[in-house]
Length: 311
Image (cartoon, rainbow, N blue to C red; front, side, top):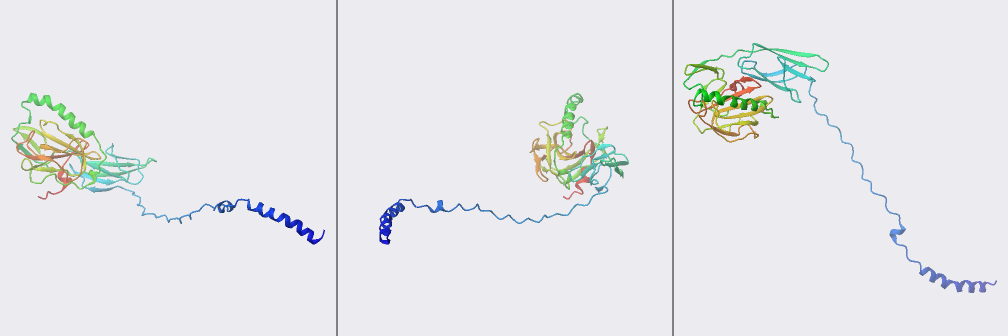
């Protein structure tokens, strides 16, 4: 086939190739290119581990306060103990090993603090309890208090004592016991803890709190944080309008003879918060605040926890 004849053959087919090529749809850019790989965030560099100071192991008791009748002590138990007792009775401890112990007005001359470990080992601390110096007070008030007769007093008193006992069995999670206590009201000290009282010639039990003589209507405040566990709906025969605040770890405060109560059962109170006003309800010869304290069944001297009164 001559050169001119081949050219005519291929030349005739060229328009068909051009037309066919123009009928193919254009390929989109997104279809033509593969999708980009997912973006990978760079991993954050590892942060250094900061280790705070490690508390040293306590190998013995640490105690703050004075071992004395009517007094209390705050302590730290040895590290890793599984139990703590005072004269054979269990003593609660916090997660950091803190605890509270106290001594009744008539506590024995010695006490024994024992910490026990899981393997049976024990650490003991013998405590010498200093005696108190109590006085005798003659009070010109009837022994039956606000009751109109001895018979009424005998009828009403058991139910009142049951309410008080029930309130003091409550143990709230409060750290008030760790605080330095303050006086709920300041004024003239008219009654002292531990003194025995004689009511119109009839001997009574020893005085279980501290009395502060102030005018009726004077506000009083919480000596430390706590939870209200009793707020008398009506005056008790002896205590009058009674308020009890639980400070935690078995420690509580009682405020007697109040004129008015400004808090109710279940209220959480903070140190310095107003609780009510001072009055003369119950067995009282004049307006005053009677502040009593107990740890479990041990009666304590509030003045030993609050320190000297500053008027």
